[in-house]
Length: 401
Image (cartoon, rainbow, N blue to C red; front, side, top):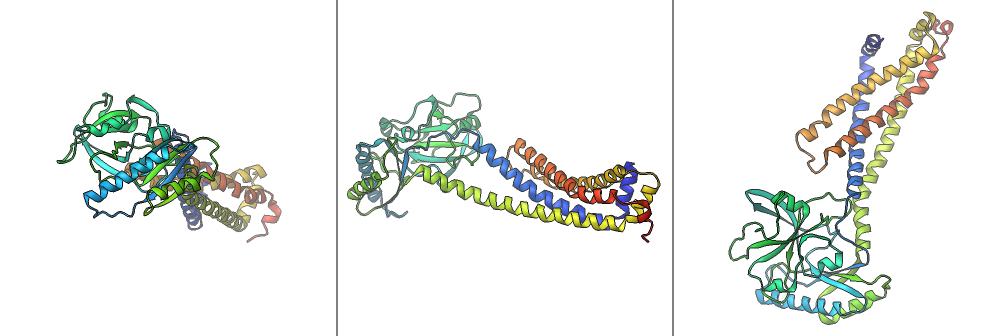
């Protein structure tokens, strides 16, 4: 039976080749959308590493340039320190911190470090000691930054668990040197480890992350804070934004400030990531719809041309269910050939390490989901034409030439 089906498929190879190609390209589109969907969902289920609720973000434009003198930078840091002190004294504010970038920011700072002979890529940020209280970071080893760290002869570093595993393996990272400092830079040393931290938010993948201490009152740092983060008391009214802006503008009238909540930043970030995925899903849906309608039309036309063949098979004793199964099995063979061709193409992606950021489980899930979707589509499309073919009576079919 199987050999006979393959022979029937081969006898109509030109028409069937077009159907196989259509299935192949549909499989690729569904695979991309399904894999991305599973990838983002898998990321969404993982711990975020920080708390965004009741956190306000103040973006600070200091009007500075990369060519400012050391004296100008020092004055700017002192002004920022005063802003931080004034804000922390406000009644609705539970904690405040200065930072280079904040969660959900698109930009950031990345670094490559040489640690124990290994090249380690990591995201990084410079923060003041209040950062952990503002975002509710959870220490798993060592300690967080303290104001006294400004007097140290070396630079304290806090890393997340992903970076600790990548850099030091199973060894205790506390007190270990972090990279190699080039004079006149201070050497860096790990003082603490926090839970895995994902600055990019719920849809971002886990990755290495480090925090560097930012002092505002000691030696000038060229890592200048551009964001003021505040944890406010639950239920703080939106009217507090006006009072906050007035206070900030009074301390630094030449600077500009923009206030948003991290909840608003999160919503904008999710829309930015999900809009292309939803658009891709809509395109994939209409593509599959067109493919399905096309398959129904092609199968129906093929079966009309094979009415004499079907009639002769019925006259030879085949039942309606036999004809129905034959058409479905032929379509299953065409689908298998198209899917097999698609699998051969997409399997090259992990082999060539083109998507190293996607876990093997996610890739496998996308492969299975797209395969099931294509088989389900083609079987549904073949149901009606196969049912109509099974109703052909032998006497009626014999009239076809």
